[in-house]
Length: 109
Length: 117
Image (tube, rainbow over all chains, first blue to last red; front, side, top):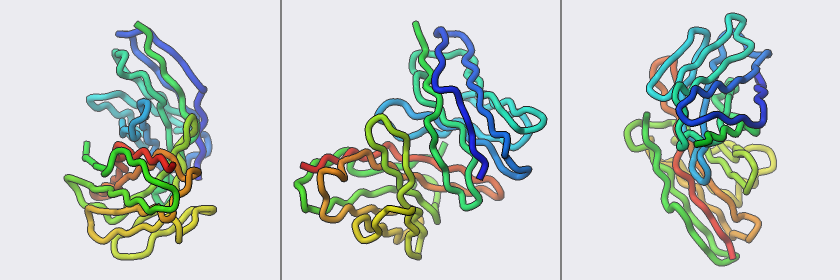
């Protein structure tokens, strides 16, 4: 199973873009990268996922490097409500999700 | 995104009693659901995989006789914490796997906070 590593925390100013990095150097060719976030005392929320092409939806953009060993989640205009723990996950072959410590994003006013 | 609900959202019970938590996929069918537990300041830990129409599979260290899982329909899985003790107090979260062709996404419920006195 491909493991992911994320820095423990970062902050950004409200209204600015938040770029959250993730390393997944052991990812195999057919494994997807998923991003979830967990706001305090809530269940995780699905954000986006991708294989090798960059992806964008109403919540965020996902940029995957050409070698697929890392990716960046971009929140284009962070708000205070985006303060959460963000998890970058590569599911196992049986769809299991392993949650690491994630990266705590703090959006400051 | 798809919606998953959990009921109850919080429950307080006495030690030795059993508590049932429901997880429902509201707008899609899920042959597979997952149950997680999260202790304060820790990350989610997978407890078991719930399979519709068959037995659940449990992660190492999770007692199957204590955490009973039933997945009787394509939209409902239940977790029963039997003979609950204070150390079972935790945040229990379910997810449901939504498969669309070759793509799949897990959607999570809002969680159930269990306090055992």
